[in-house]
Length: 277
Image (cartoon, rainbow, N blue to C red):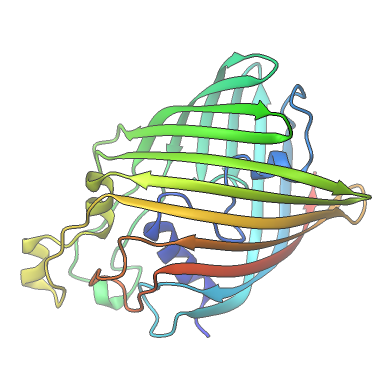
């Protein structure tokens, strides 16, 4: 089986919302900790070790299966409405935000996020003559609402760095169920990336085609669906066990020449044990 880190990098490009076992959606942590809708966001620092296995498209490997160990690093800091989220339960590696509006049932955040880098010669030798895809800085907003026992979240972001000049959007709905100390949760979502965003990261220009072995390819807008179920169990006051199963589509990768292995979707399972400060 291939390296999970390489495949996870491929999955981040395959859809604008990563939903693998180690990269959850923005409301995943809230579901996992069973937070009250009126509770203030908590500050935390988390380190752990996880295992992941599954199948999906890959930029670097001939086989679609992947399995191995991953490090879990996550953090969040909140101060007077301002917050910083690092990896973990967010789809972006780093996210800054401000809670601009808050009522009993709805809140609105202004957010600034980094997508992470795309393909480059560091990704694989196949890409040594291709233009490097740099990280896009996405600015926008997200609204989170509490509808009965469900949590919904809508986000819209635009690249303000001038890299992709693209737009991404997402819609999520999730809920959890508590059984003794076991907290189960489910999450459904749709993610969208417009043609500028998709083509910047997954397209091949005519110039690149002339100096590489890749055929010219123009990536179109992508709409992907995802679903996940998971469970969280507090081993002690500071140690947390988590397990997640994920499935999501990868529209826009099937005929893409950049991918060494193509698949219509991703199926993956993962588990981790973390220490939370």
